[in-house]
Figure 1 (cartoon, rainbow, N blue to C red):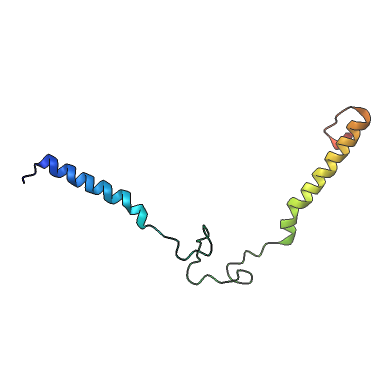
Figure 2: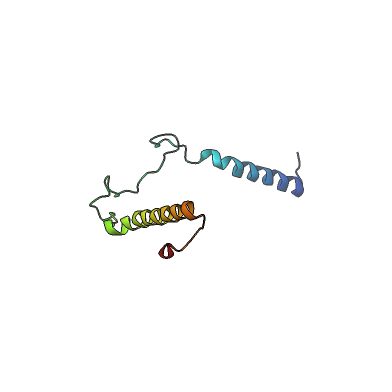
Length: 98
């Protein structure tokens, strides 16, 4: 059987497409997963516990509390605005003017 250059090219292109399309089937199969979808594994040398290691970010508690404090202040301002609105029927955005 004699194949022409066109036929040989078509066969090679088909084989290449088949090889590329099946490459995904041989990807990571999840054999080291702790649970389905939980397949993260640390790099070698990464500690079991991060706290106290060189990877510990050592966040400042005051910095972490800033957002919580600002939310509490915002809620207090909104409560003052709402109370004033319910009493007078006038909405005042600037709490200092209440």
